[in-house]
Amino acid sequence: MHTVHTPTEIRPDEPLQVQIRITNTGSSTVTQQVALRLSEDGDGQSPETVATKQVQVSPTEPTNVTLVAEHEQISSGDYSYAVTVGESSSPEMTVSVAILTPPTFALTDTTENATVVRGTNTSIRANLTNVGAYRGIQTVRFAVDTDQNGQYSDTETLNQRVLSVAGGQSQVSTATVRTADLEPGRYQYKIATENTTTTGTLVVQQPATFQVQNTTAPANVTNGETANVSAVLKNVGDVDGTDNVTLSSDSTNTTYSRSISLAANETTTVSIGVNTTNLSRGTHNYSFGTAADTHIVSTTVQDSHFEVSGLVGPNVLYVGDTAVFSAKVTNTGEITGTQTVQHRIDSDDDDRPEAYGVDRNVTLAPGESTRVRFDIEYTVTDSTDYPVEPLSLQTYVYGIYSKDARASTAMSVKPSWAKDDGSGSSGSSEGTSVSDGERASLDEITQDKYGLYYNEVSSETKRQVEEIHERQPFADGLAAAEVRTREEIARQEYGADVKAGENFDFTGLDIEVQQKVEADFDSQFQTESGDRIESWDELARDTYGTSYENLTASRQADIKTTYQEQFD
Image: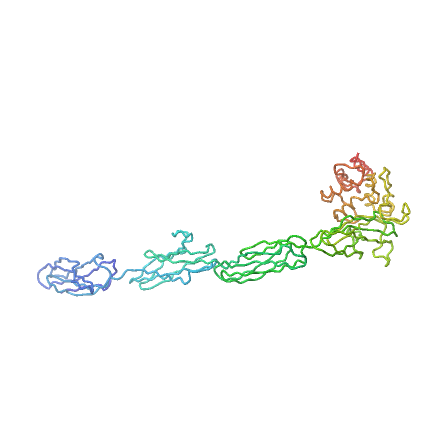
């Protein structure tokens, strides 16, 4: 009597074990051969004995026998096997067994879009299928050949995942590709497992890129006309796009902007008009650009430019006399122009001469000149019979102005009784002349300059008049009325922000301005020094650490002595 225990399926790495239980129904011990015979279903071959065993079977108890077919003797598939006992060729039992297919993986590239615009992220996808009969583990690795050398280094690996997939099942795996650092072009990518590999091509496209070509602008344009700046724009990218085209100037804060849409490789011409009304005469650079490209183009704005020179006018004006002012006006610009040329006078003592409607309209061709003359009678009383403000007895800055330039100087207004020759002429200096070695008194200086006596002027003016008085004699041909204090020079020539009669801090000026003011001041006197002369205030601050006006009378006298020694 025999009982067979048989498996119905095994894995290919396992042996086929068949167990049979043999019972001896006789009265004596016998020896039997037990054989395992195996045949592959459907191959048409006779069964093959794959394992045998000699077994002694006693009559007293059953014997268990195990027959083994090693896994090297079989492969995946369906088999029939039988066990025979003794000399009998008939099997005890015929059974089917399935040798299972091991985990076997198929890899499929399922990437939906391998074409991407640079700067946009995309994904590579793969489908991993286990075509085996039971679960297995597989590692999926994604890589892109970013250096295009035909190899895949560790740094080029995008993603690596370990997947556990049941038999007959699939899983999807993805990896993200960031293209911001990739130049446009074709890149090979690889998806690989331990057993299989698939490859593909990633195409990185150039985004819409607007290139500026053939930028043009008029070489010359008349002020007020529109300057048309144009350029050819080409989208050298692989895809359609939109960009802002801007035109900006290096000399103004104006920026022109326009949105342009172009298909890949499409070109268009863009023209932008520039308003030149508020542009100065000369060459202006413009930046014509897109997000990716910029060109610089220049245009020259032409205009008339009226220079003023050769100013002629009185140094001293006596009340009631007619003052004659004239200047040469020259058009140094490139085009014919018409401008209003004005006579101005600083009647409110702010060093900015005001216009009072005394003007001439002048038209000049390029390079042409003319002399413009104004005959004006000034008074000391306000009257509608005169075109200008009444003037006090003091010194005034006046000038002749065009839109572009000016020529200015100073004149002193004096009472009519102060005339020396009675001629009534006010066309030349009539002040006190001391160039022959005479010294003007303090009263003479203040009378000539301000129409006031010395004790009638402010303490600040007195101090500056005293400096002029100490520096005498004046330069040849220079009258007292024409000699300017350091304060007047600083205000009139170098724009110092100080009102007449206010405390004037010479040392508060920039050192370079101090040098220029001192040089101008020195030139008014016969005795000059090659070095810059220190003022009373400078000497006082250097010696005593305070201003001149804060010193005692004796110390002020010491400072005056030290000051004068600079000229000895």
